[in-house]
Length: 138
Image 1 (cartoon, rainbow, N blue to C red):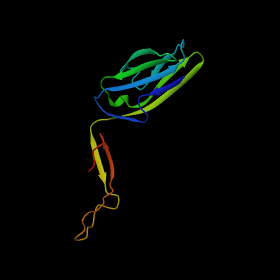
Image 2: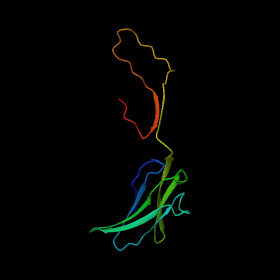
Image 3: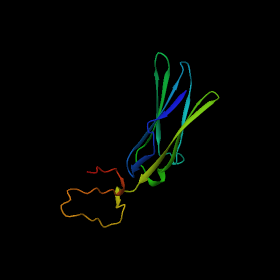
Image 4: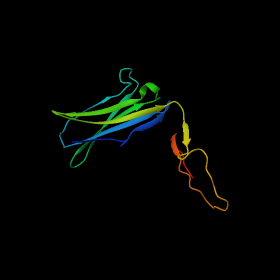
């Protein structure tokens, strides 16, 4: 049995956006699994889940999709998908960060003054950049 999440790294989203996390488990034919979610808003019932099952010739695919329609700051934290089949349990985790609004922070790496010599055609600037959503830098 293998367990996968549709996100391989931390998830960043804006407040008010919809969050969809898909937990997929593979198992042998005639296997039964139980997929559950642990997440910060579970107590308040902020999310809903939907389940799907697909049968292939050699194995079964089990899907459990967690949807939170409007993210709040209180929804940030660790999301855990737990898959149980008989005595076996496997889980996958992802950390979700919720930002109030888009932002951009730019800091020059070598001070705030850049010197350019007369006649120089180009100058490479290597700033320290943190932004969400990720900007296109040209």
